Image (cartoon, rainbow, N blue to C red; front, top):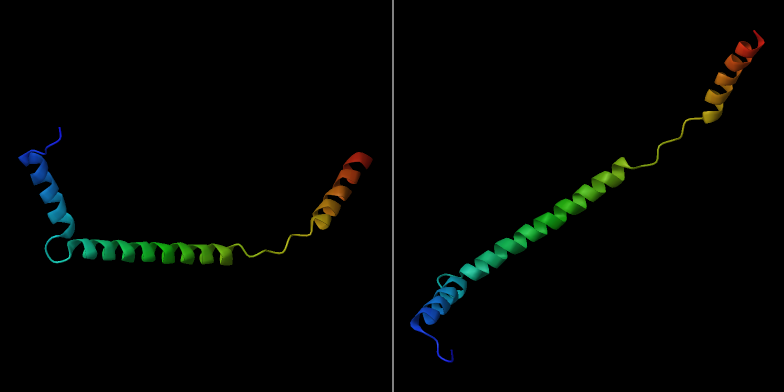
Length: 80
C-alpha cells in the first residue's frame, strides 16, 4: 500500500499529459470554457433586457364603464 505499482504511475502520467501536455491543451480548453461562459452571461443579460421591455406597464382598462354598462341591463331585467 505504501508503494505505487507501474499501473499507478502510468495512470498519473496519462493524467498529467492530458492536462499539461502538447500545445497548451489545458489553456485552450479553459479559454474555450471562458468564452462560452462569457457568451452565456451576455445572452442571459440580453434575455433579461428583452423581458424588461416586454413587461412595461400597460394602461388598465376603465372598469367603471363596464360595470356601469352591465348595471342598466340588470335594472331592465328586474323592471320588466
